[in-house]
Length: 132
Picture 1 (spheres, helix red, strand yellow):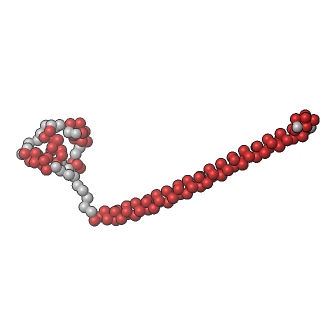
Picture 2: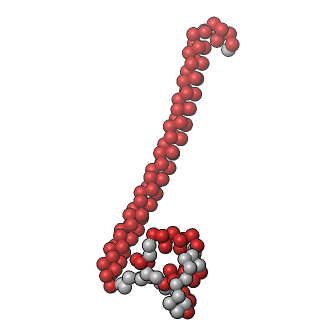
């Protein structure tokens, strides 16, 4: 048999090349099957993403509807005003009209009772530095 290949070099070369072509074809088939499986996984992931997007759109619609309902009911709800702690009210009443020193603890209590609209910029700055 080896003698045949030595005498028929063209035929031996053709046989080796045929084997290489078959091998390359098998590799290509494996590669194609792998890519097809990845495409199926990608399609499944795409379906999951679309499901998630649809769910989020439903949630956003419900949230928007609740927001519109709460906005329409806002006129029925009494707005919350400034909260004045009872302790601060008692301490200010105990001052008996005396004006405390700016920045002192008593002054901070007076500011807690004073309406927020009546504060000056200077009072706000001092309150932020000394009372908080």
